[in-house]
Length: 253
Image (tube, rainbow, N blue to C red):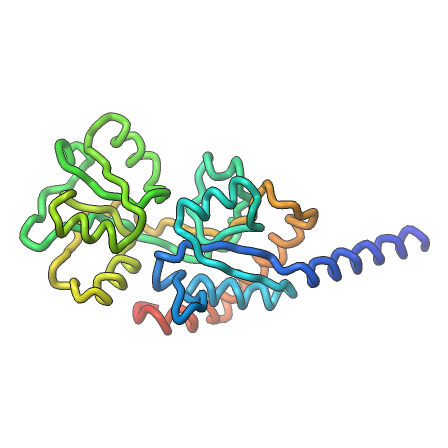
């Protein structure tokens, strides 16, 4: 009886402590319509989905926006509790605990180039001598990493979407790697949807992105948090809540 009482008190204490300390999550502020700031307020598909998942899990969450490179640094050093949304990789698993049961979204990445300058792209060898732009911190998978290290292409990094689009239009690069949804959202806002197109071969197809906790964050209830959020995200996928949220931003849902 005494052991049972102690266990109940510990659960109550953990729940109370969890409820009293909001989780601080960071997201890429240059990833509209998934994560962005409008009128000073963080919003987007990922932000709305994760906020609702936290509510269902009985957790308070505070989400702020940062450049992707800063997001990764904060997860590594534990200056945030976690991030959304990240591709999972062996390197990132060293400093992040991924909520792998239910992805927060899926991504297709392609190469974008100017209208009238399309070129064949069937393998990375077709990029020989070409300059390809990427946003600093983006993970395009092992094939891209290997091709870059072998010199199959030259890679130029940019801090954000507007900079990489300007680099393409200004002739600094031949093409850039971008998420289809995110890039077209940006191009539409810039009035450039008829000026930039993407090549047929995809760099990544249906790549899952996950919410993740920082291994270095000073919290003792990480596994409990992950289980509660994974359960909520799974419920939202099954009951249609995810699609209802996403459809407000992207008609394809």
